[in-house]
Length: 390
Ligand SMILES: Cc1ncc(COP(=O)(O)O)c(C=O)c1O
Image (tube, rainbow, N blue to C red):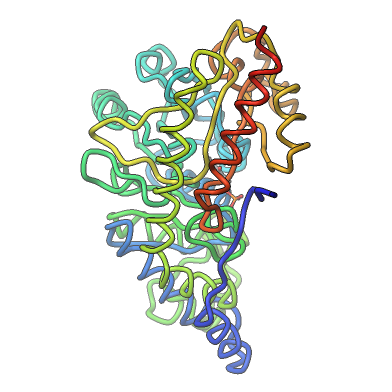
């Protein structure tokens, strides 16, 4: 048996819409982008969605919007030390400095008790990440943000379908950023979505995705006919070239059609993995779902516990040999990712992020995984533990 890490369901409707877009000749930012934005707004429960070309662009542009609201280049954004590297990259791409805060070992998410000590007079926002679809502690984060006059931008790239105290993630902070890359529940192959209830933020994000061009006229603000105004080469902001195209959006519209079905399958898989995995304590751990939340079913993460008589490398090799496709559970950006070396952090500064960076793995919970696959995975782990625990 083989357990693939990811899958993508391109629906018949998506294929039909892609062909329609190709035939229409309007393949850039057009009607399917609008339709995808409106459909995504409905599932997240926000007024505005701005589609862009990747989740990284969604993070970057959401942050760059803050330049219109008093942020200066070189200001600081608080982010968790553990995330997919693009969270930290996005802060730098938007012209800010990432200030890293360690995560909690049990949740993989930013530790709110450590946020206040990281705030300076340059701090403009907190960017929590709902890692592996587990909602960050939004009450505590929003409370700190309110006290210090900071914006909250949720990196919800991998948290489609996650719910925190009755609200969808991506609708709790000032803005949210999702990825619609193939690995995610709603997919447009490549893509990203900025979510917000604030139409000023959305308008500026629309300008930023289109090189910073901003005009209030109906034609330009809908991006329907770039360059219709006489000032077509006057740009008011440092923008990005990050529009989603209609072919991607057509795939996304098809993906929305099966959203509820795919969400239910992935949730069932994730909960089954989590329940069965309890048998492997104390050698292997995973996260828990609390009563106030619903984890967005992105993947199944697990961590080799401290003191276990085997390494992550040994476990990884064993399960890969059994054709179970696994990935590392990200790294501590400031101390384990070379690109951030120039910020001067030293190993040991973020013990929990580094521990997970050294000991964590994750595998898929996607819609092509069945109960049989889950049983096979559990059996494989059981055999591994039997051979490694004396
Ligand atoms: C937490 C997080 N942020 C940002 C991104 C960036 O998304 P993309 O790969 O679409 O640029 C990802 C990727 O999945 C992610 O996991």
